[in-house]
Amino acid sequence: MRHQVVLIPGDGIGPEICRAMRRVLDAAGAPIEWEERIAGAAAVERYGTPLPEEVIDRIRERRVALKGPLTTPVGTGHTSANVALRQALDLYACVRPTRTLPGVPSRFGAVDLVIVRENTEGLYSGIEHEVVPGVVESLKIVSERACVRISEFAFQYAVACGRRRVTAVHKANIMKKSDGLFLRCARRVAERYPQIEYDEVIVDACCMRLVMQPERFDVLLTDNLYGDIVSDLAAGLVGGLGVVPGANLGSDCAVFEAVHGSAPDIAGQNRANPLGAIGSVAAMLEYSFGLREEAAAVQRAIEQVLESGHVTADLKPKGTPRSTSEVGQAVCELI
Ligand code: ATP
Image (cartoon, rainbow, N blue to C red):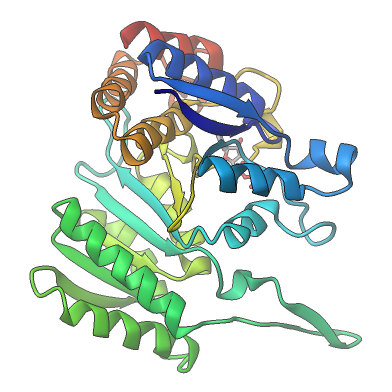
């Protein structure tokens, strides 16, 4: 049986990264059939919208997608197609496992944490308006339903993956109602998982502790905005945005993508690190299709490439870096 997957190359470095992902899947011998769809800047040119309805429908039908990054204009222009896709498909849990990698120099020896981020509401609800000229309002929407289900997801994940602790990240001292609700829900869910430790940390203190003692953290349960910021910070602890994989999961669909954005500064230069995206491929093989052996082979190959030091420029300040395609090829050969 062949699995159907929607592939969205995306913007910036997306197409280069996606080429590497496809090659890796072929090398892994995974029984996958692709259906490529356009979203992001290319879709704006062609269809007048960064996220054509048809793309959403295809993912709904196929249930699984592998996605490159989609550029979001800063300060003006269309709203984020990444956020819109997560909301449209109700991909409520964003999961970003972040750990020290073999061969990658980092300040810390044993980072091994997972960020579980609420992916559909909070300040990313996109509800903003100008009240009077010079004053704007941006609404943070927090619902009990979303807080309970993301908490439930974090604890179930902790149990399934042999994790010890869930830490809720908040700012309930200032946002007493919204983050207060988030905490109340997390505490309520925590009571049903006595085997998992539960604690809480204010988001600013969390950032400080992350750069001083990241080994302390296990599963971090966050809202949408804190999770976005904290996951880039955490990526910086283990080698940067190029190496961290990610998944957006809902009850019906799953969209896998690396943590990084479209990196327009290095797009089209065959310089981007494809390993985070290739890690997302491994996650997809295991989570969506139960192809454990194939997933493990991809994961092993990523680690071997890192250990070999034949890596892209972001991981190699000295010496000659390898290109995106060379790193992709090396992963394929090792598989
Ligand atoms: P976007 O608006 O799409 O989020 P961005 O440039 O603001 O794009 P990122 O794409 O996340 O944000 O990039 C932040 C920085 O990290 C950039 O300097 C970029 O070159 C670097 N970067 C991101 N992804 C990679 C990668 N895969 N390999 C190497 N460098 C990367």
